[in-house]
Length: 130
Image (cartoon, rainbow, N blue to C red):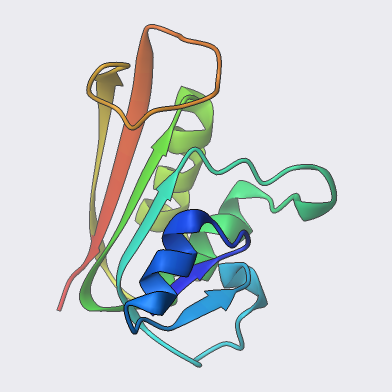
C-alpha cells in the first residue's frame, strides 16, 4: 500500500503493477486503520492550508508505525528535523519507544530536491522498538 496526497506517475505505475494507492495525507487516515512497516518522506512541507505543527506531524506518523517499522524523513531544515526528533524522543504522548538518528547529508547524498541548493540536507530516522 502507498499513501500520498498527490497521485504521481510513480503512484499510477504502482497501481498498474497491482499495488494499492490511496490519495490522502497520513493525518487524514482513521486512527488505528493501518500500521506501516515503512514511511518515507522527502522534503515534506506542511504549510498553508495543510499546515501541521511539528509535534502533531510526528505523532501522526509514529503512532501508525508497525512494530519494528521505520519512518525516514529528509528535510532541508535542521530546525524542523530537530523539532520532530524531540517529539519522538521526549513527548509523553508517543505510544511506543523509538530509536532515532539525525544526520546531515550533502546535497549529493540526499534525494533530489526543488528547494534552493544549500550545503546540507538532514535525514531523520525513527525505528519503533519491538
